[in-house]
Every structure is written in structure tokens, then in C-alpha cells.
Length: 210
Length: 210
DNA sequence: CGTACTTTTGAATCGCATCAAATCTGGTGG
DNA sequence: CCACCAGATTTGATGCGATTCAAAAGTACG
Image 1 (cartoon, each protein chain N blue to C red):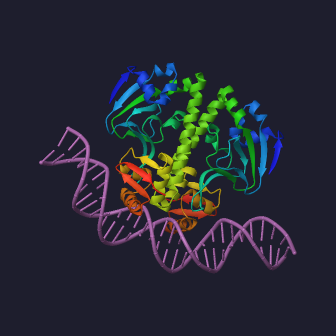
Image 2 (image 1 turned 135 degrees about the vertical axis):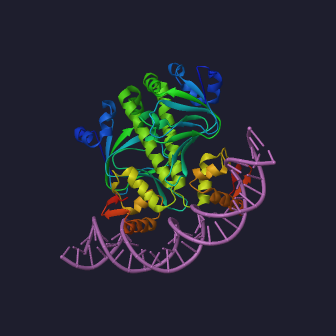
Image 3 (image 1 turned 120 degrees about the horizontal axis):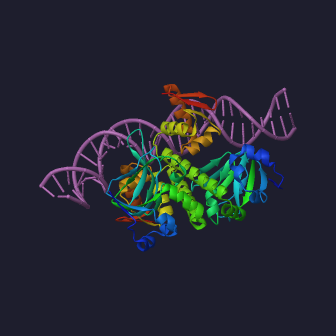
């Protein structure tokens, strides 16, 4: 991984990441950029919280390993903040890894807290960010409470997609994990839905039919 | 339901509800108290957000109704705030009902937002509250990703209980819903675990065994 | 005492997990 | 360019566990 301090093209960054636009100057100046390779570890559970991470490009996942060895995806971010709740904690409560080569912005936690106190606009935006994350997690819980694979798929398309159409931005295997299913179960459910005519699949484009 | 404005015994309230202790005076002065009967509706999905709710006594649940008619519990609060994310939204994204006769504090959303801007301490506490809710929801997602009933029960006791011991504060039926199981599956899993010796059940006290 | 609800058990069924293995894919290096 | 590899995708067979439907027993409350 490579670290470059203060070599950011902020204009380009802000254009890409609306969330970054609100970062106060003082905080921007102490930010660090980080490039990772396809399967890098950002932090591990139990480590002290030193940074808040902003995903510029690529994908970062919060994961927790089960007794069994299988991993649960707690959050997946392809742009925007990740592990927002860590700011409130001394240590991390899960692991964070990159799922592909990624570009990140590391914002020191101390400076971040100061910025929240000093900049009311930023503070508001941050609260809004936390609230959005809560809504997203509730949708996820609701989805995982559904008992059939088809229902979870439908729910995902409805809530994450756009008017009944979804372009999948990850492998089906990791989608399965996000849906709380084995990949085999997902594949089979997709095929069944396609045969039923409930779902139209074109590559990574999924369209729901009435 | 009964509404009494400004008839609160704030000392008693603050003793009961630590979260209430941080509410600024200006906001306290426009708060309303509400008593509900056992199955009252606080708000419905789609309604405009007018208040933030603080549960003083009793239990409030955020629920969403599935196509099937079965209800999913999105949040359960027996003290403290509920529907925190609604403050950031124009309308509610789910229904809220009381599960038993309850006492609530209604804090007008407008005044709440003003208070957040004016009182840095309150603002910080609120962010901390949102972060806590996020962590709780992540734990819930992790639990729902587990495939077996016993694993979910264990996970619940570990994360919600105290050192491997949990005192259940709800009916087993609604616990089952929270675990994403049918009540029959929960009863059977509990019995199996008891027979295995993995779990000790004494009324509403559940203790995990190694 | 009756009503509504939870708790508990039973039996049958279905769907998902699991294990196994074949094919397809993109990327690497010879 | 091709061989090769790691990973994703896909299909098959099997078993278990949760759902579902049904019903009895227990419990709280008016």
C-alpha cells in the first residue's frame, strides 16, 4: 500500500465524492491518501481507532469472521464513508478489507472530532450521514428477516435498485453473502425467477417483472 | 392516550433515563408527555415527522408489515430514543407502536434540530446515540446472517446479555420475530439446547454453558 | 368463567445448506 | 499466444432444519 500526504487533487475528489465536498479545510489538510491492492486489510477488530475512512474509488468491506470461518459482510462501501460508528469508539468492532484495488482518504479521528465541533455545516452533514446508514441497516435487517431467497432478492432490487431495475456492482457470490444465502442458493433462486418470468437477467442487470 | 404538557417531574425522569439528562432546557420546555395503552400507534409510514420520541417507560417498536401480513421488528426500545434516523427525514419510513402501556416524551422535531445546533454537548451526545444504534443494527444483521436457530440464540445472549446470561424482557414469541424465526422454531431450539446442556433456562433467565 | 394470547408439542413438507464437481472467467507468466 | 491458475459460476444429489399447518395446554385479564 502507498501513502501520499497532501498530494490530493481536491477538485477531482469533490466531483467524485459529494460527501468529501463538506470536509472542512482544517481536516482536509491533515488527510492522507492511501492506495491498496485487491485484498488489503485496513484495520482489524480490537485495534485502536486512529482514522475515519473515506472511499474514493474501489470497494471496502466491514467483515466479521464467524466461528465457522465464513465471513459476514457488515457494510460495503463503494464511495463515501465507511465505519462511521467507529468515530464514537476507542477500538474497532470489526475488520475492514478492500475487495478490489482502492483509493482511500484517511482522516485522523482526533482532527475529525475537532472539525465536527468547529464546523456546524459539517456536523449536520455527518449526522445526516449516520442517519442514512441507520436506514440502510434497517432495510438490511428487514431483508434478512425474509425467509425465502426470492423474497430477499426482490427486496434487494426494490430497495437498492432503481425503479425495479438493479445493476449489480459486485460478484454474485458476495451478493449471496450480503443476502445471507449461500451462493448456490442464490444462483438457483435467480434461475427459478428467470424461468418464472418474475425476473429478467441481462449480465449484471436485473429487472423485476410483475 | 393522554397528553400533558409540561407536567413532568424532570428529576425523576433524568434519574430513570440517562439520555434525557442531556436534553437542553429550551427543548425540555416544549416537550410533551404521552401515555399510551397497550397497543397504541405513535405514527405510520409516510406520515410527516413532527416529533422525536423518548421512551420513559414501557416498550415501543418500529415495525414494517410484509406482503404476507407478518410484521418485522426493526427496532425495540424500552427506554431511550426511538426512530432516531427520522429526525433527518421529512416522513417516517416505518410504523411505530407501543407493545405495552407506555410513557413517552415527545420532542418537537423543529425544536430538536435547533437544540442540536445550539448545544454542542447535546449534539455530541446525539451523534454518540446514532453511532450506538448503528452498532446495534450491525450486530442484528450479523445475527440474522447466521443460519441456525441455536447460533442466533447464542449470538443474542452473547451480545445483548450480560456475561453469558440474559434476562428476556419480552415474550418468546416476539423474541422469535426479532431473531427472524417462527416462534415454533425458537421453542424447539431452546428445548434442544437445554437438553444438550448448552443452555440453562430459569423462567426468563437464559444462561449459556460452555 | 370466558376470551385472547402465549406457550408447547406434533406431523408433514419444502427450501436451503452442504458436499461435490464441472465449466467458465480473467489475469499471469512462460 | 498459449498454458495455467485462482476465483467465480453453474449444476447435481442428499440431508437437515426451519416453515407451515394444526391443535392442545397454559396464562393473564376483564
